Length: 68
Image 1 (cartoon, rainbow, N blue to C red):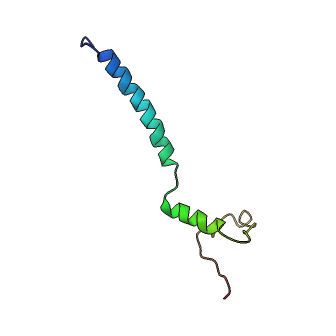
Image 2: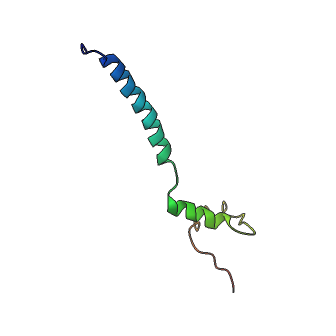
Image 3: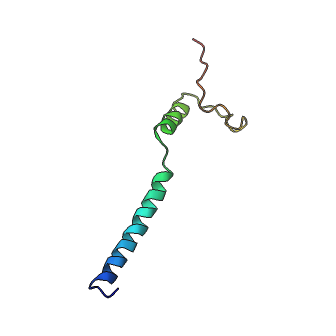
């Protein structure tokens, strides 16, 4: 602590740590590529399914059975 500029360096590193730790926490909540693809497939419908809540979201990632 007797070194010149030690207080300023400590404050700088503490500020950087608080900024970067908040950024890292925000990045942890971001969905990955698979989750984004799943959300796209769910929302990319002409008529969205409205009964997802009643089935407790059990088959969100399953493929649709669309008759050909």
